[in-house]
Amino acid sequence: MDILANLLNGTLVFSTALIFAALGGLISERSGVINIGLEGFMVSGAFFSAIISYYAETAGMGALSPWMGLLGAFVFTTIFSSIHALASIKYKANQVVSGVVINILAASSTFFFVKMIFMGSAETPMLTQVFHKVSIPYLSDIPFFGRVLFNAYPTTYLAIAIVLVIYYVMFKTSAGLRLRAVGEHPSAADTAGIKVNRTRYLAVILSGSLAALGGATIVLTSNSNFAFNTISGQGYIALAAVIFGKWHPVGAMLAALFFGLAQAIKDQFQIFEFAQSIPNEIFYMLPYVLTLLVLIGAVGRSRSPKALGEPYDVGKR
Image: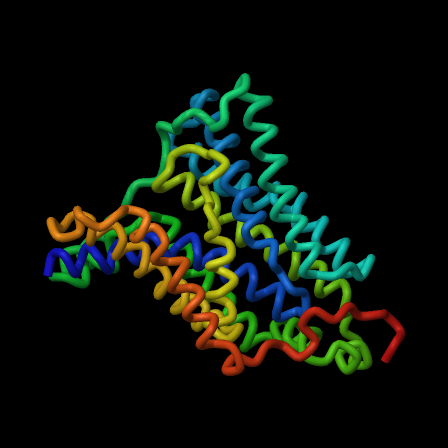
């Protein structure tokens, strides 16, 4: 039971970053804008969180520094998400190409700035102030379930809360209805008085900021610093979670948990004696192989928003 509890708790830990990024991708694509740039937004979030947390530490902010890093990742990644929004919405560039450019731009620019700021070093210094697991009083004492669900990082609780908020906003409010309308039938939404492109701008910018929280989570919980390989393709796994979750907040969260389970299995199985003879590369490739298999199975079964990838000309109805 201890091994199972550790495995499921590890699933929560590893899936948190994917949940943030998948929610970001979901919001953008529900508005009709393809977001291949989740990887770049996660890289940006990891970079800004590491830099801001480091300087907050040196300024003596102590336990507040990881929260400052998380907030900084959310705010400053708008630099990259605004570029994607501008290219995709105003200039009607190919949204897939724009997203790929964001991924390349984020990876190369952050690596350059790290080397420039830290005198040629390829990574930021290790952070001493990061998030630690928080046990919820009384609930964490529940046998098995307490260890699995109520002993987690603050970012995990935050991610689950944001899932609930996005679900409520998307399906229970007029703002969510407008968001879904511009992704399904923008000309009808325009006729109803909804500002299609403005809604898409806000969705794409918010999308980048949410995905950035995923990158920041990795830095501020498990890695404690930023390097060029901090994200290592997790943005693409998050994109798969959006598709596998059928563009639904709860579905995307469950898909992220599924992929997080693959990463947790990698960590847990390596402690067994029989696994010592298996090359580490096999365990590291497991989440990505699983992503490919899931996408193959999801093709044809998931229905994307009807206007996904289609630029909208204001006035053309």
